[in-house]
Length: 110
Image (cartoon, rainbow, N blue to C red; front, side, top):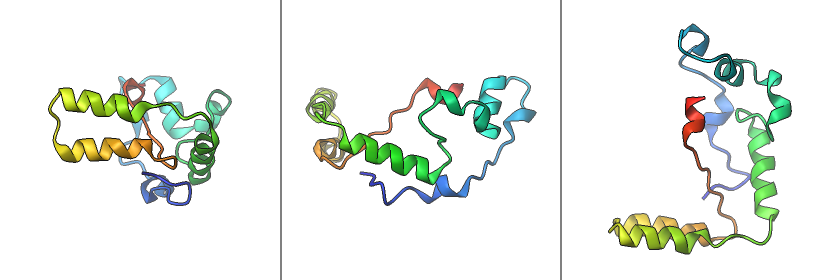
């Protein structure tokens, strides 16, 4: 569970081990997102490298009501897939009113 006051230090460091601009296959959009986010700022709810941006996004989500009932759905899927008990316990934490789920997918392949 992530709380607005405990944003991971990795975000705060703003260090990138790879300069995406040096990769020939990287799109201009991906390069701007990583290296010149200001160009894209109007299209996003906040800069993902900003600690304050994460705090605001987390606080905004925690104020949102009603909360969806995602925990039982995820737990049911994990049960059907015979996931380890530890995975089901962690999924149950989604039911906590202070829980925030950060969901990723193809976004990382911008």
